[in-house]
Each structure stands twice: as structure tokens, then as C-alpha cells.
Length: 282
View 1: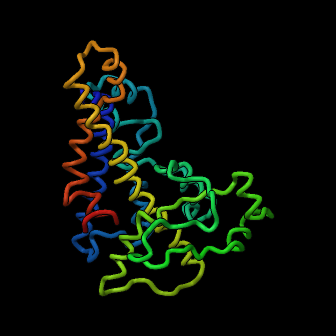
View 2: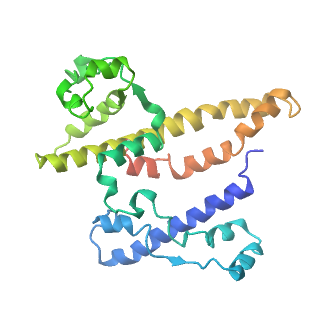
């Protein structure tokens, strides 16, 4: 009951193959690259979505595609705008490749992204930390009222809070232990820079931290891992004819297969999460 549904599995494999192609080409180029595990320029990122082969949308190709028996291959030869062997281009960069740098796009991505449920209404100003000051020192926020009000189109801080129009994405207490570990290393990478560049870096690090928190905690721990005991208990203790079993069955579909794959690929000691994200072991 917990195997991948065939259409979902086909879609999963098709994008996995596209990901593999994006790895193979750079690996070949990396023979002359000294930083093979890094994006050297923004063009390296854009190349994930550009190029490829645009398949024609004609009746002949449609007939061929309709007669392909495997859904995975059908997914690879889509002719609805996606290019062969590359990821579909993001809407945010279709018209303007630098649109991602704007504050408006940053805010849109936070709301429409992978972890918007962590955004909460600001209930007190300044935001307070629950970390023990004996271990972490003074964690009182240094945000000043004027820094917020200059971006609120004439509203005061009190007016915005009373009308429930001020929200916060707060990973402070969850990430501070990692920040302390980073600051205890022998090398320091931070330095004073141009204000505009510092603001861009602040937004970039916010997005990276939010993505890492979402992947390991919101997504894996609080969604996949927490439901696994209920899947196991249901299969062991309830008859397949039991009303509750029938009710839960659609919600448990694919869960055990996905969790098993995640343990092998993502959350193991050498997996993507622990090698590439700040909440990992490395």
C-alpha cells in the first residue's frame, strides 16, 4: 500500500534524470575547473534552465508520445513548453534575469515558497529570544522602529501591529546554536561591505536558512517522520476493512517509500541535507 503510485513514480524518475544530466555535463566541464562543487557565476545557475532541445508541438510527435508505454519517457519528451533534458525556466527570470534581486520578489518567494507556514504575526516589538542568556549572551533584538517604518508607506509600527499587518519570519532561536559554532571556528569570512551588497547577502542568507529549516525540520521531521509511526501502527493494528484504515489510507500513500528513500539519499551522514545545508553534520 505504500509503494509509489506509478504516475508519481514516473514523474519522480523523469526529474531525477534531468537532475542527473545537470550533474554529468558540469562534471565533464569540471576537468578544467578548480571549484567543481561551486557555482562560479550566476550564469552557472541560469544554465540549469537554459539550452536543451525544444520539442515541436505537432501532431506527429503527439501521436508518438501517446504510444510510448512508459510514463517516465512521456514525461521526458513533453512538448508543452518544457525543453528536453533541462528544468523548466522559472517564471521570476523569464522576462528579467535580475528580477530575483528585488525586495518585492524576495517577499513573494517567502510567501509562495516552500515554508510560508513559519511566517507568523508579530505580537511584540522588539522580538524576544527564549535562549538562555547564560549560554548565548544578550540576544535582545537590535531592530529599531525607524528601520521598519520607512518601508511601511506612512503607517506607524503601532498601527501596523494593531491592524495585524506586520509579520515576521523568525528562525533566530533555531539557528543561533549553529551561528555560535560557526563563530567559534578559526577563520572568519564576514567583512564590512557596500550597504546594497550587504542587503542582498542578508536576503540570500535568509532564503538559504529558511530552505534548510524547511527541508530538515518543517518537511522531514514535522511532516514525514512524525507520521511514520501512525502508518506502521495502522498497518499492524487495524484491519484493512476498518473505517479508520480506509479513511487514512489515501493520506498514507507513498509515505513509507519516500521516507526510506530519504534516509538513503538525503538524511544519512553523507546525504544532501547534511553535506549541503547548514543544519547538517558537516
